[in-house]
Every structure is written in structure tokens, then in C-alpha cells.
Amino acid sequence: MITTGFGDKGNTKLLDGTVVRKDSNIINLLGKIDELQSILGVASFYSSTFVKDYIIEIERSLYKDIMASIAKRKDIDENNIHRIDDQIKELSKHVDLNRFILPYGTSSFIHMARAKTREVERYIVAEGIFPNALIYFNRLSDLLFILAYLDGKEKKELKFQ
Image (cartoon, helix red, strand yellow):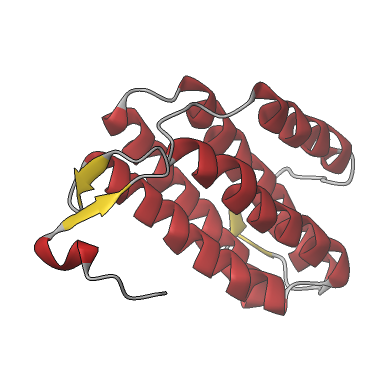
């Protein structure tokens, strides 16, 4: 059942069964990741097929691996970081950047996701218990920057300062 009424008094349960207030740091953090998911959904819709595949993989990992761990008050597995590091290393070969990029065109949705990722990082710092998650989201913002660049390049929408 979707509606249980449990949260009507301002509380909710984490996946580990812990009852917390809906305005707690952990719930705010999970909410920011949920907002990031929504932005990624829009970004994937407007992205080129090549970039879309990466974004969909990120979305799945955020739900299955990242949010699930955080909702149990567990840090994420380091393999998530290694996967993103490998993607950054591979995709960076296709980036020729010697000027500052301005968000422009439909790749701006990926830039919005990147900016939201930075906000998620700040909430992780505030929570103070997820060092691997902090590294993951720091890397994710780099990966999203690269994906925005590649998407804009493919669509001939790159705009430089």
C-alpha cells in the first residue's frame, strides 16, 4: 500500500528500520539525491543516445546502490567510485577543453544535474558519516560535466565563454 499514514506526524523510517524526523539531515540528503534523480530523468530524455545510456546507468546506480546504502546508514561500496573513475578516464579522451563552457541548449539539463550533485555533496558533508559517498558524488559531478560537454559537442550546442 502506498499510503500508510505513518508519516503524518513528521516521521519516517529508513531502510534499516530507524525512525527519523522528516527534517533530519539523512532525509534531507536522500531528498536531494531524489531531486538529482528527477533532473537526470529530464537530462536523459533530451540527451543524445550515447550520453543517455550513461545517464540511465547513473540513475539506476543511484537508486539501487547509493540511496539504498544511505537509507540503511551505510556508506557506499568503493566499487561505485571505481566504476565512475573508469568512465571518467575513458570519456576524458574525447574532451578537448581549453576554454570555459557555458551551459547551453539541451545539454544544460546535464549541467543542472551536475550543479545538484554539488548540492548533494554539501549535504553529505553535513551528515558527516559517508566518506565514500562524498568521493562518489565529487566524481559524479566531474562525469556529468564530461557528459554535458560530449552531448553539447555531438549536438553542436557547445558554447564557450
